[in-house]
Amino acid sequence: MTKFFWGNSVSSMQTEGGWDEGGKSPSVYDVREATEHASDWKFANDNYHQFEQDLDHIKDLGMNMYRFQISWSRVIENGNGEVNEEGIAYYDRFIDGLLERGIEPMICLYHFDMPLYLAEEYNGLVSKEVLNAFVRYGKEMVDRYADKVKYWIVFNEQNLYHVPEAFRISGYLQGEKTANELYQILHNVMVAHAEIANYLHETTDAQIGGMLAYSEVYPATCKPGDILAARKWDEFVNYTLLDAYTKGTYSKEMMQFVKNNEIDMNILSGELETIQNQKNDFISFSYYASSTISAEKIPAGTIPNEYMDYGRLDNPHLDTTEWNWQIDPLGFRDVLNKLYQRYQLPVFPIENGIGVKEEWDGTNLIEDDYRIDYHKKHLLAMYDAMYIDGVEVMGYLGWGLIDILSSQGDMRKRYGVVYVNRDNHDLKDMKRVPKKSYEWFKEVIKTDGKCLTEGVDRT
Image 1 (cartoon, one colour):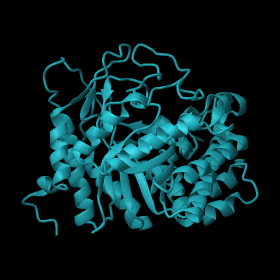
Image 2 (cartoon, one colour):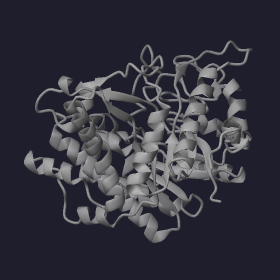
Image 3 (tube, one colour):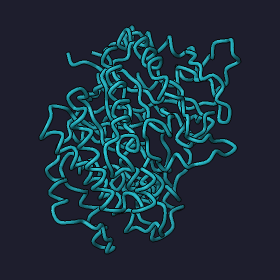
Image 4 (cartoon, rainbow, N blue to C red):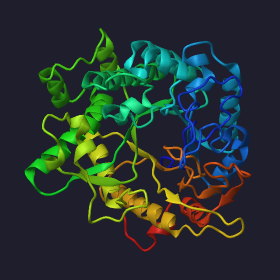
């Protein structure tokens, strides 16, 4: 039987700290200032100095995979300069620490933290100069680490570059945020993924998979307009990327839209062939919540990539977190099926979890039954997808299972089964404290999930 991966996922800027150490160049996150409900990004959970104890917790939980991100700014001076050997030495120690504990590393090459120089000089991934710099960086990392690291993703949640969020995460600092620029960013990102995937397969025996953020979007009603809006959202944000991963071409519907609206994607000679030639070994994704879409709320002339900016509605049939993320395990099962049944590649949920405001009193166990309930229901939905629907699932990685900064820098929003004792403006002692969910997750992994399904026939 193929090994099932249980593990944890993080990004560099939400985890590492060490923002000005070891020869690291600044990233766009390093210059963001703290606000009332957000920390600065200088220390995170201090993984740069304390990763050994975090890896000990991962091992104690029984996890056999850790997906982490290499910080481009830490290993390449200003993103396009010389290799920073001090940064390489840090990741050497990190990867060796994983392997010594029997934990399979998975590398992500980019999780939104553009080198500051490339953002200021070239405006990020809208630029071919930055595309080329990123490909050089990615190939260098493959050369350095693919002998030890056998699982790779290039861009975290790559379909976010198909929506207005792209302008926040691509290093884009100035401009009108036009449809042309959005489509240039999504294309440059796809070319970069394909270049690195092709290089990895040509030079190593490692595996690589595309990754997207897959939030299920339902029609708000059974009105045909709502159904059409939900389908077009899927096509332009999810399926066109998945088609590129698996068929080597963008969605015909999207490209017809590009033609009809005279959108300039700035496609250079050979780039479509690069995408055509790529191969992905699996499809990975994040899943947290679902929502609905109402066509009536979308202004006429809105491009499909922006539908959710206007048409999103809460689902009255679902519970929600205090951050208004709607909890939907059945949507998780549906996404697993949409990916596998349509594309027939192994699927790998590599982010899943619930963010909740939590405080530790310094003595008592944090009783996070809500986290146990969330993960239990999503794992059972995953098993239904596997054993009832026939979906080939590689593993299950939780997000930030040792507390990290949230995507907005808010330490109040915690995903972990291990509490990190700091808040937004006071680093305290950074002590790691397992929560109630820690021992629960440990038993789930020890029994390979059988403790969740005892007495249930899933043959």
